Length: 106
Image (cartoon, rainbow, N blue to C red; front, side):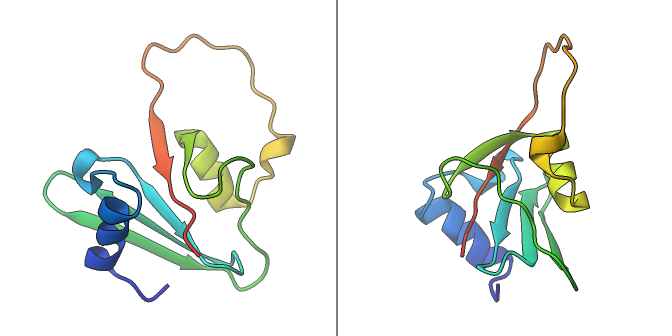
């Protein structure tokens, strides 16, 4: 969790083969899952959000642990500590479903 803007965008570009300038949010979680970093490009520069939990861990959704795609609200649930398996969604119509690119880096 020592990497900053350049190091994380390098991981996105080289390891994931993705363009960090797309506006997707790239998430990095440490092995103990008590720290999280969110990297995204806002059009005029990178933003980096870093949070360390004093107690507890972040939930990583099931699936490929190197690359996940999730809804914006699922990211919010993870940051707020909501168990994703306990969330039930009602049926809704969506024209544009915003997806978030997620990287779980250890």
